[in-house]
Image (cartoon, rainbow, N blue to C red; front, top):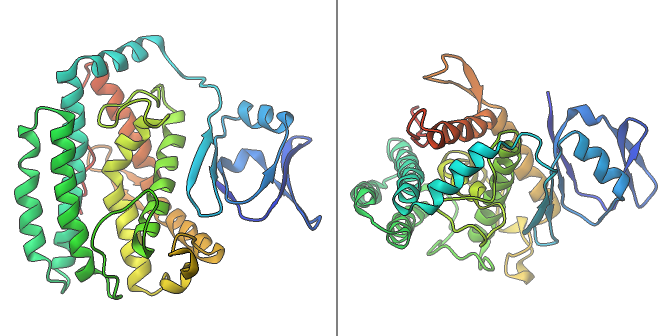
Length: 330
């Protein structure tokens, strides 16, 4: 089974015969069979040459880069081998026709809002009194279908998330004093944690899109051009409550992540290396978890759910079946 390869130590990545080799700055070497790699995450200073880039491109392996503060800085996306001109035309048509674009944008937010509601209901049934937030989110998500512009839709989504994030103070056992979502840059421990987890999910979606015929630069909820691979942001919205938020709740409530996981002198902007490694390790475990898929009638992993979402979008674009965003059913 292929898996993500995370690099936390400074060093060099290169091709060695028919595999990859990582050498840290102390001279220690490690061979990594290329057939087992789905994508690479560089969380350190890394050197590599064109021979390495050409080699991983043959195997369709993206590389995702994060800086010292664990902020996502970009991805190397190999030349697409599956792109189809007809589907590309359909993607553009569904963006250029504002009504069609709004249809898809609403679908993403409807699914995300339903998954947020499911999270609140889950914790409300387990001794966390978030009934008032549950009621507010339920009321606000009914406004999604009445929106006529992307701006109105984003406004409703923002209101939903504000009430949802307010409930985190009840859900999380630690004293977090989480008041609002701040991203550029994050201003406290929770915002830094959300930003890191969300960007990893974004890159996971991007890696899955690569294995489909979709073009990741054409999106519907998020404006193309604002972020290069903006379709990944669209699809990630659907899965952040299930994969990202539930992971965060677990890490905080089990005290695996605390204020000590961050550099306080940097206003909690910097996530310590061991904490970052713990988070991605727990995330990878979750992505390997399986659920019985209602339509396919078989067990599928959370990771594969991301791929299936792209396939569902393709069916919508070619007129085969209307897209409905993924909803938690358990």
